[in-house]
Length: 357
Image (cartoon, rainbow, N blue to C red):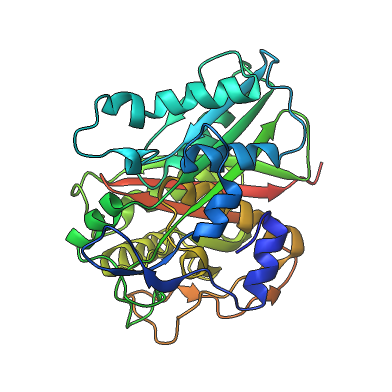
């Protein structure tokens, strides 16, 4: 879709999507409808001595404004769900060394001159959001002055097989919140965000997480637990539901997740705010999703834009949430809400705001 938030949002405005049906090697499916880097892109991104996953992290780190990683007041946080799991093969002599996220963290730290072990956050599909919230809290309690939060995930046959076992994959571009939605699209991507005590134009006002303790892979049937996280996030940000300009939802286009998330938005009284999902544009990027989608949502807030939830034609959830159907200028937006959920019943809600001070 592009490199950088502005380029990606411009591509979205042109109606582009990175999701397509394509051949997928070493998979029983033979083809998969997903947003994947092609061989040439992988070759261009790959850095000597590093896996493709690690190369993505290094590339987004290099794209950031200069940050003094050697400063003891700088925190480095890494978020991912699967990391280098694609390197794991039958007969691997040291699988821990191949796939452990702590190993990736050490390699990344050495590459960028960070003198400590980075914090690793792996919390299913809210990993990126959890990492942002964790970093914010460490800054608030005075341990650090700035935090670099990185997130990435790559798609491997192992991951495809896992989602296929749940019959959760769509054979076409996914349709979040639509009556005919049939599953999700997987995606590859990476994102980075710097949090700092130094005031900037955008503030991570507050956030919260919750657990619905319903099922290892099935979300809550009521949405009340995600609604709790949303209410806590709004309360901590000192704003009301009516102040939210739009909701950048998790929106996986799976029957149960979209239903749960819609009920949560309704229960938190945000159903009048426009809701959209970014999954039809670059797929579900797993542990990177919460961070990557937050970055794009912030860019849309800066422009006072809405983003269309692609594929939505006939309302397919049981409550009257407002699904966005246009991309472009909307109205002045001061606060936005990002929601996420994941296996194990985890939920997250983040509020981003324009800094008026």
